[in-house]
Every structure is written in structure tokens, then in C-alpha cells.
Image (cartoon, rainbow, N blue to C red; front, top):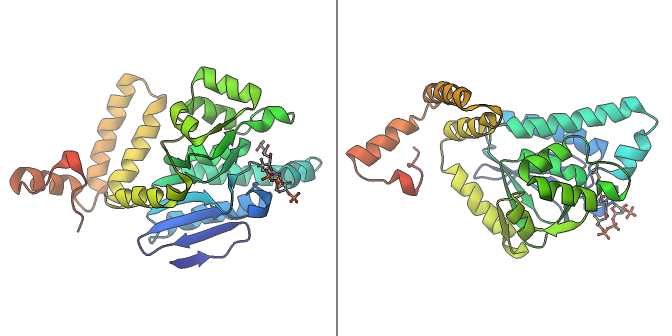
Length: 275
Ligand code: ACO
């Protein structure tokens, strides 16, 4: 395990397998997202995107919380009369979440505890999400006088149903990890004491795949959401061609050859072995 860089509100460790463990690191404030945390996360994302040692990103929280959302004191109250400072931290937040959303590297949200309000932005930006069964999720904005802003109403509505989106946004009721799976907010919920182990297994599964194939796959799945059928055919055809040029490992050729010629491998059951 190597410390890639030191931050005050974020912890970044890239392990020997290539898993970048990124933790919100303000446990005493339940990992509420302060302006400093946003500025640091912007740097973390740029670092991860350009660091070849980082192959899979896991985003989690230190202590009992994933993130209690935006910091009501530092992000809101202290910038209420300082639009310039508010803009800078909003901008950084938006940037790092967008970087995460479009990163070429696969990302997993490992939700270990509280996930409120603004925390849905990074949650939705991660490709895959795994939560502790007893994690606590909520759109608490309505409880203290704002609507789910930034992109929270949008990403929540993209993930959950019309009914659930309105229900949870209007009541502010909390829900646990199991319910989050039912709603489509996260992929898996596991007992808290198995969360890291299950996340590690998932990260290792992703590490077996070709990075180029994974990057193009996640980009394609995200991009087709806003397309009509004809556009999707066109886009995916072009993207497929671009992937063959980009995949220097030649995964497609290798996969076909191992299956059809050597008969040593079943594509339906796992990744073709990488060199
Ligand atoms: N912003 C600023 N400080 C926070 C936040 C937050 N979002 N969440 C927790 N903290 C701070 C508390 O003020 C407290 O600080 P202090 O020790 O200096 O007094 C410390 O973290 C611990 O908080 P407690 O409330 O004592 O912790 P507890 O474990 O009892 O409760 C919980 C945790 C449920 C997360 C609670 O802190 C809470 O409701 N936080 C606010 C959640 C929220 O509404 N987030 C904003 C959503 S809206 C948005 O993000 C745009």
C-alpha cells in the first residue's frame, strides 16, 4: 500500500493491485463536504486519471459515515454572503463529480454509512455502488429548507422511480442499504463487516478485464441514455470500431482465439486471461 499524496480532508491510497482507495476523511464531521474537501477531490481526480498505478477507484468514507452531504457551516452558511467563495466550491464540486462520472477508470462507491443530500452526486457519479445493509440514505434537504440542488434531484430521479423520487424528496425519510438496492440506487447491499471484502472482490473482478474495453463499455452505456434507437446504433457501431483501435492488448482477437481455436476458455463465464 502506498500513500500517493497527502490531503487534509481526503485520504488516497493506491494499493499494489492498482485499487485506488479514496476516502472522505472528516469523520468527526461525518464526512460533510467542505470547500476544502471539494478542492482536494478535484486534485485527487486529476491525479487518479493520470496515475497509471490507479486502475480501479473505490470511493468510501472514514468512520461511520460515507458523507453527510454538503457542509452546512463551511459550504453554506460561511459563503452565504460571499458569492465568489460559494462559486469556487460549487465549481470544484461539480468538476470533481463530473471527472468521476466520465473517468476512463472504473469506479465503485463503497457506502459504509450515512449518505445524505449532496452525497448523492458522487454516489451517482460512480459506475457501481455497494452499500452496507445498515447504511442510511436520505434526501434531507426538505427538512431544513432547501430543495435537492446541484444535480441531486436529477441524479436521484435518474436512478430511482418517479414515485420513490417524489416520496423521498418530499418526506426526507431515510432508507437503508437493502431498500437502496430495491430502488436501484445501489447495486448490492452486504453486511457491514463484509463490505470491504465484497468491494475488494468486485474491484478484482474489474481488474481482470482489459482497461480499454472497460473504459469504452462504461462510456457507451452512459452515452446511449440520451439517444434514440437510430442514434444508438450509429454511435455504438462507431464506438466499437474505435475500441478495436484503442485496445492495444487485442482482447477481442485473444478472446475469439482462446474460445474458437484453443477451446481453452468460455467467454460467457469470465474474462479472457490478460498477458
Ligand atoms: N454539515 C456540517 N456539519 C455536519 C454535517 C453537515 N452536513 N453533518 C454532520 N456534521 C457535524 C455536526 O455538526 C457535528 O459537529 P460538532 O461535533 O462540531 O458539533 C458532527 O458532524 C457530528 O454530527 P452529529 O449530528 O453529532 O452526529 P450523529 O452521528 O449524531 O448524526 C447525522 C449524524 C445523522 C449525519 C447528522 O449529523 C445530520 O443529520 N447531519 C446533516 C445531514 C444533512 O442534512 N446533510 C445535508 C444534506 S443537504 C445537502 O447536502 C445540500
